Length: 341
Ligand SMILES: [Fe+2]
Image (cartoon, rainbow, N blue to C red):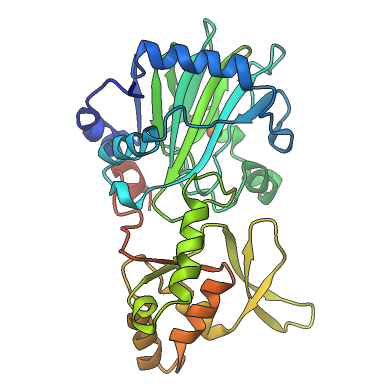
């Protein structure tokens, strides 16, 4: 089976921990890259994502060329980024194509919340096309499910563009076959002189987050959750509950008369009300605690009596996934983020 990568992932771990990004020249084997080029030529039109078209950048969804490449991707990203491969969820697999008239100096953006690790495969890169990353200026995580929401959230005087003009910037003049990995949801970035560039972006996270439903295993995760929720009592109370993959955000919402609603929004769906106790229980789901442990914590704090059944109901509603083993969420923090926190 042809491999996706031909480099020693461990040798990039220190650089990623130090800087929050790595550039791996020639990281894709020639035969795999040739297949990617052919894939783009053959299938870009059919898999076009009209909903994701943004100005002069078109996108298409990518299907893995070999099923084994999914695990190879997770293991490689885990080694470089210092996280557990089993904790990684894929949240995006898009081919991005910059049109001939693409703005040579677009505004910087941050990737959606689920893009804890953004992995770029350079497929076609014209001379001068440059990935620009700002690894030191405002590396707070984009809490939204799109960069458009993040931009809309600013007032005119808090927009980042004026300060980014003088912020330290890293310019990566990538070549076809290169691989870039960076903290996409935390670091402002853009592509200058992008016209004619084609990049495959694979985004991953350690938060069980797949709002768009693009991880090939997300359907199985949901099915496993439903099976567990309907299984014998000890099976699901021993499981590790986490926010469901499609959950976009949680909120405490106030109407104009200041009455309060606790809610969860699954991507593309309306507000789903939960109780205050359920809201608290959701905040305790760190990937390590079991259903019974969370229930005990809630009981001890006087917040809720029978949270086990409440959590089972949340699982049936798609608000919670039940995992059969714990996951380590975001355990590795690079120096740049730790210092900025
Ligand atoms: Fe991006």
